[in-house]
Image (cartoon, rainbow, N blue to C red; front, top):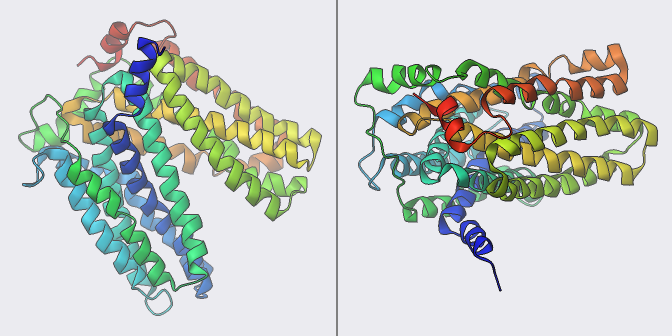
Length: 422
């Protein structure tokens, strides 16, 4: 006999709205690799100068600057699909499909600047899709459901990235890259169909009516909250140790004596499924634990997994040890990301969902870029063991900040007052 609590849990997991979160995650994850790894492989195969290939990374700027045009999506509503979110998502998806096909039609050798322009269009409309899908998810789910919804979104996102990067490279061995990009564009059709069939969420608020309400008020609203600055600091610090360690893992594995084949098999296969499992497990546990406790537990596990890299120095090039460490690191990393994303969504004001979430998610990417930059010099100066120990300890300030706005035993009402209060 299934208990009532299990029935509620199963109903939440298998609801159509959770399926929408999964498919929208897939639609957001697929375009990312099309302008990074797949594009780099295409240009390298064509003999394009490495300097030009490196500069192509700049086309990804829209992902970190998306908060600049996010207010437009809160301010205006497109006259189709009957709502603020679905209309913008559909528009971004349609233009994204066209842009991806256009990118595949360019010539990296004869006209690399046209490649850059087409790739920029892909990242711009991909970032625009991300903005509105994040807002849709925030407005469609209650706070206690955001953990699982975010986990399913990340699951779909990872699958989309894997299809574009791994699947795209495999297809490129049998067909021209132009056809690969055409196939990838067609893979977005399930996302378009889902957008059309999904219901429009209700934020329960009146959309901004002018420029001030759309652009200025979201920032005033956010910074009027208790602990607003500390939350921004927390977002910068929560995964900083994980990001720093991750930036140097491949050189670390190679220096230990693992082969490229061994690293590829373990990192890509075991690592991928461990991340997916951690994301889903994190979402399920958040239904029971809530976001506050999950941030604490997953944060501690995430830090411990970073310390485990130092153990590989003792074992040497042992493939079973590598598999265990990578599986544990990716499992806990997936759990931490699920809680992190759910937390950011939960603290946004539904009236300004797009702008506030775009700001927070943009900050989330800063440590991945800037904190990772000096890691090579750190390893040279202190060695691998101390490097991973420092990456573990650097997680402590972020965890301690949870005492201020997400204490372990805080009641939901108290949390809402301290963080979401206007």
